Image (cartoon, rainbow, N blue to C red):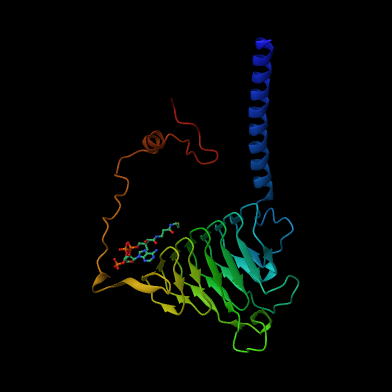
Length: 254
Ligand SMILES: CC(C)(COP(=O)(O)OP(=O)(O)OC[C@H]1O[C@@H](n2cnc3c(N)ncnc32)[C@H](O)[C@@H]1OP(=O)(O)O)[C@@H](O)C(=O)NCCC(=O)NCCS
């Protein structure tokens, strides 16, 4: 009796493991097949999708994508919402509403919600759950629900090379310069100069750079040490224990 029970237990255990492997393999297949690129656009017709750019599956809410352009070699994480206008199916005119440059990385769960103009320069990286919008609700009419008052739009721009920390909100009218750092959970409005670090809600400049004085106040942490000369790709692979070969790269000699 106990042998039968043990056998049944091990069969159940093995089927659970097989089911787990099948689910993960199936999900990976679905994610690869569902990822959107200019070669595999699925149902989407973006104004432009550069070569090498991918939107991970599942996507967030994406609509009026004819008015959305994304340059080459950008990565849009899972469940990222990118929309133009407040309803699908609108004619939004001759110009793109949301422009995302090349080499950008938009973190999982982020929202880029454009109505007039949102421009992200090249190589803008965001952490997860960042919210960028160019529209706010109007509230001055006390007779009308806020949601029914005509909203206000102000264009937003984020300069090339900027890094937006997780959970940050970029408000309508924000104009960020080049290589700006936005600290996690900051709420940013107005103008931010090139090479500034802004933090807090409302975000204030906590560090800046100019060619004469360099970083002020001085950066507190040590600069990371780059990989020393002479370290080989094999040594790095051995260090992390992963197979980091590029597609098509032959296996290292044992
Ligand atoms: C902004 C950040 C990069 C640090 O930059 P830094 O130039 O080294 O800044 P410091 O740590 O020297 O902090 C400068 C000031 O800003 C404040 N500050 C830093 N991050 C802050 C934040 N998220 N919110 C509020 N204040 C913050 C510090 O307390 C400090 O204030 P003080 O001068 O009164 O002491 C880091 O704090 C951060 O937010 N990183 C984002 C991490 C992230 O989201 N990663 C995932 C995305 S890939």
